Image (cartoon, rainbow, N blue to C red):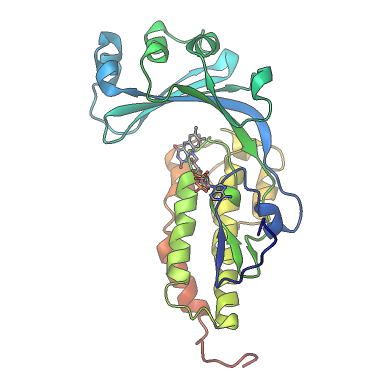
Amino acid sequence: MGDGRSVVKDLIIIADGAHSRLISEVAGYSSRACRAGRSQYRWLVSMDDVMDEADLRAIYSSDRPGFKAWVDPENDTFWMTYRCRGGKFLNIVVGHDTKLSHDEQGRWNSPVSSAQVLATVEGFHDSLKKMVLMPSEDGIHYHHQYTRPPLTSFVRGRTLAMGDAAHVMKPTHAAGAGISIESAAALEVLFRSVEFRNERAMQQRLQMFDKLRIPRCNLTMLASSGRRWLQMPGMEAKIRRFYSGPLPPPHAPPYSKECREVLFHHDEYQAAEKLLAQDYLPESTPTGA
Ligand SMILES: Cc1cc2nc3c(=O)[nH]c(=O)nc-3n(C[C@H](O)[C@H](O)[C@H](O)COP(=O)(O)OP(=O)(O)OC[C@H]3O[C@@H](n4cnc5c(N)ncnc54)[C@H](O)[C@@H]3O)c2cc1C
């Protein structure tokens, strides 16, 4: 511990996010997330305010679920919106190349002025720009995107890492939280009935966690490298170091049926139950049997 004390626990889960200070201990080497050169402005506005504007009402009055997005290809800027909190708020994200200001060098998230956002979204239609000036719950924040090479194991001793601590990714497929929730499902299944004092059983379950999660998490993390991820030189070979399952065709755009099939249709409960049924050793089996 930070104060020099040592403690012994049955299982330690490292889940302290993208800026994890503990992940290097699990990896066995310095494994820090680095800025990826892209950033996002993010803010929330009330749907009531959106619907008060006739031109925005025309865009958002459809009942169809999902997101609405616009691209300024000249400036490589991406404007994405979707409803949240039961449809009462609109989440707005504007992805763009990082523009650093001097006062936020070491920070990963900082407040930003409407004027700065308006300068970035100059190429978009005036109707959309109205959202920048609407009252927002806690203002507009600037988030950097981060990247880190994939880990070959999420486990060390009785410690395992999950979530952004284990696989920080870019928001290309909006999959960071989803893949972390899959890992939580694996934890639930694998450690539901284990005898924590049984070293052999614990090591077996921790190995199963890696077997299930390294392929899925590293695939999703590498897939977040860019919209045309499978057309990037060497990308398929990098993915194949960890994952042997099906991939979408190289030209399949993000959120296409083929991409969704691979990235989002996975059932981790089913995968973990299947692995447990295959590899399960009765806890009473003596070591070496
Ligand atoms: C702008 C933005 C938009 C996103 N949109 C999406 C999306 O649409 N879909 C999606 O799936 N994902 C999205 N993500 C990614 C998603 O937010 C993350 O993948 C997810 O939050 C990771 O969860 P986590 O629990 O691993 O980490 P975090 O959510 O970062 O949680 C880590 C927690 O650990 C705490 N912590 C850190 N250090 C310590 C310590 N020493 N002691 C105790 N606590 C500590 C932190 O305070 C924090 O609460 C988005 C991310 C950003 C930045």
